[in-house]
Length: 258
Image 1 (cartoon, helix red, strand yellow):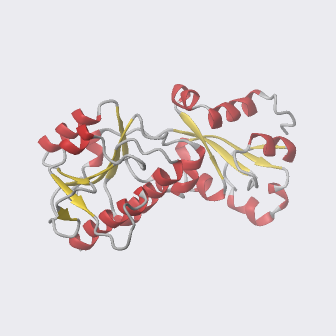
Image 2 (tube, rainbow, N blue to C red):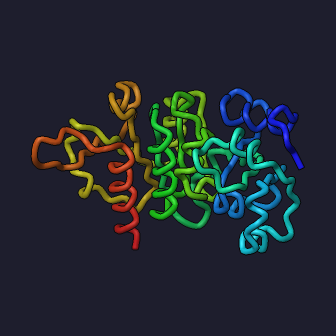
């Protein structure tokens, strides 16, 4: 049993939770909770840790039969956990790797969500979770978008992180030009959009550009959109939450393609 937070493995978990640099250097991240651990592809789990209290629950123990794990004292588990009320299980998991080709859909038209400097981990995680439900083929994001493997982002995905392909681009404008050459029509969600989001035909390769929560799409990215679309709003509301706006757009594609 691990009984000290000074243990090498526990120090690693603390660093992985706190520093994105450490996560990308080691190409691993920490996932907490029963759902996030058990839905991870088995071959991607590098290590599993459970608390003393976790082992007192026979039903929980039954669910992790067949997994290799190490036991951690409750005090130490609480110290390394990123949540206030830990579920008593966490895993160190290898980061999945995708290319842009993986996002375009092999047996159906591409349905992409393209993010320009999204800053809230909860918004990013919600977009990934909603995107899976709406049937997207992948997510593209620039390096100034919040870290995909931030603990709060991971929790907000509710497991969708393991199933939705993604591509983090060092040069979003160049990636957008590449996508256009591949036949993807880019729709920029914009307050000055001339077309209501319900009007275009999304049955071809489609990519939605979603901008920063406070500033929207940067001028350079907005300029690369083939069509700027708007979400009609009543009352005095000027804009929608980025994740809500993305959900409306993604589900309109789903509706049209059924």
